Every structure is written in structure tokens, then in C-alpha cells.
Length: 268
Image (tube, rainbow, N blue to C red; front, side):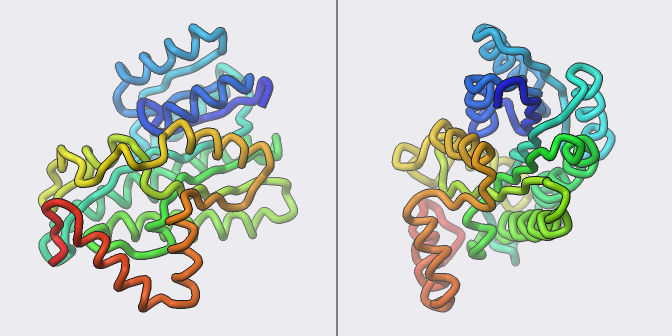
């Protein structure tokens, strides 16, 4: 990763921040993107203090022009793009029957179209470098989660897009990786949207029992270095993905029961 240029979306906290620090520790120069420029500058300062070059760009990945500007500013400063980490994401928690449609649309705009937009503008530069495109997805991209219809849809769509992109580029040298961390300790559940689009505010899960963002970041960096095709993390995640291929009905029942046990679960 020495002197590679790595763009990371959703870099102001959680997995994105951890990835930024992990890539910087490997000698990469990092470009941080997120909507909250104050938090982003805080992450940038941590990286600068370690003697690594960094660029912070305010960017809402659901806006095409923001994604275009992100890549343009990267090229203006560093002249190349070697790795794009599509990490920006938002979750939701509501029964589809009760949910306003704009909630699903917002989740798709950030999780799916944000990946599409950033990849579209970065791709010509990545192809020149035979670089890497990474999508930070979820086990919800393999198995539909109840009360997460919009979130699961966005991750299934992201994975389908990246799988097709990988096949298109079998002979160009482009590396495409889908990373599925499973439940990770981060603020994504605090900011998850409820049925009316308001932030959930409080996580329904025990964050202390989850994989840390730093652990996930280390796996992602290693996956990029080794040019892995997919990363499915946590033993629970691997088991669910495996069983869903052969025993989908059994998995559906287990997933339903598991999600129904969450505090204040909308699943009855």
C-alpha cells in the first residue's frame, strides 16, 4: 500500500475511519469523504499526526456532483486513484407495511447509488492503475433481514452491481471485492431510519459483543492487498451465508426468531 491513493467514503466514523487509519498505517495516502466535515477533519488530523498525507472532502454520496468533485479533487492533489472503498451507508428498521417509501429511497440513494456514482467517476483512473473497488456490504446482502427490507435491498443491489462489474473487467486487471462484516460495533444502528425517516437514536443490539471496526478494517486492508473476491466476516455470518444456499427455509425461520428478540422489535 506504500504511496497508494485510497478514497474512503463514510470516513468520519466507524469502519470508514478505521479503514482510513489502517490504510495510512500501511503507507497509503488517504482521501476521506463524508457529509460531516468537522468529524472528517478530526479523522484527518489523527492521520496527519502520524505523518501521512491526507485530503478531506465534504461529500454526500447520494449526490452525483459531490461524487464527481470527490474524484476530481483527489486527482488534482494526488494525480491518481488506486483504491476506492465504498463504505458510506445508512440502515433502517421498520416493517415495510408501516414504512414510508421515502425511507427506502433514501437508503437506496446512499447505499446503492452512492456506490454506483463514486465507482463511475473513479473507474477510469482505477483502470489506469489496475486498482481496487471495494463495496462494504453486509450479510443482509446475502439474506433478507426482516424489518430491514430497504437495507437488504440496497446491499443485494450493491453486490449485484459489483459482481457484474468484476465480470466485465476480467481482462482489465481491475480488482473488485465485496466485504460483508456482519454486525459491527459502530453508530450505523444509532443513525438507522425508523418508519417515518427519523433517526432510531438508540441501538437495539449489544455493541460490546460485536466485531470492532478496527478488526473489520484490518480484514479489508488485507483483502485489498491479497486481491480477494469476497470477505464474509464472523463465524455467525459465514454460517448464515452457507446455510442459506442449501436450507433457505430453515435460515428464514432462524433469522426471523433472532431479529424478533431485539428490544422493541417491530417483528412480532
